Image 1 (tube, rainbow over the protein chains, first blue to last red):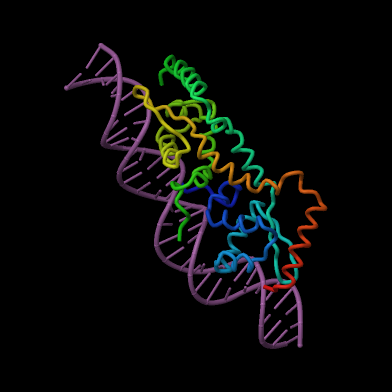
Image 2: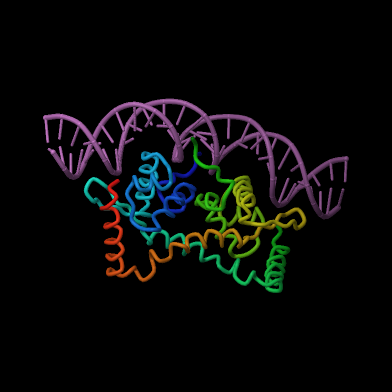
Length: 117
Length: 117
DNA sequence: TTGACATATTCCAGTATAGGAATATAATGT
DNA sequence: ACATTATATTCCTATACTGGAATATGTCAA
């Protein structure tokens, strides 16, 4: 089976480095397609395509302004990612003191020694 | 050109839903391959492969314990993701009050009207 | 060593991209 | 209507990746 479709959730959309770059550009404010193309030195269609993906997963919003389309970041979806990763905060907080680390490791080890798998 | 390789950075590794699930399982503590396979009802090779990817990008660590290998989460890399997304915090904080939103929008619009692109 | 258990690796098939080039659509001004 | 500017879409190619099945490697115990 193939890779899971990317156009469905913000995680996959953000996985592409170029799209992170694009979001970085948009973090400075609303931008038109050509502005982005200019700033990042990409071809216009490439910008449109990546914006298309980001739009599908609602990582960005658009509004028309004359012949231009101005894109801007939609925080909601980014928050979703942030929240998910945030759930693992304890794994990097305080460097997780050695003592605590060892305690947890032992606990796990004991359980496992009983239920050989 | 193809999709960017997944084995290079944590973002792409985490893009795969199954791997997020796997990390979720590991968030409860150290686990062996078969324990994970049992809990998630996956085939063992599938578990090993996904763990392999997570290992390459250091999202997890391993230690041997007899014939088993116990995997555990490595917070460092998750923090990297968290930090990146955190840089966009202002886009979801406080729902970004209407007033501020409009102010920024206007500012952007003015600039753009001068440098037609 | 042999057998049993635990995990990793290889080979395969099917699919989802990303980028490039060319083209299509849309909106504006004259 | 027409030319121009701005953006989106289509077609193509090459590649990366996932899952499944089968197999290999590793580790322990008798």
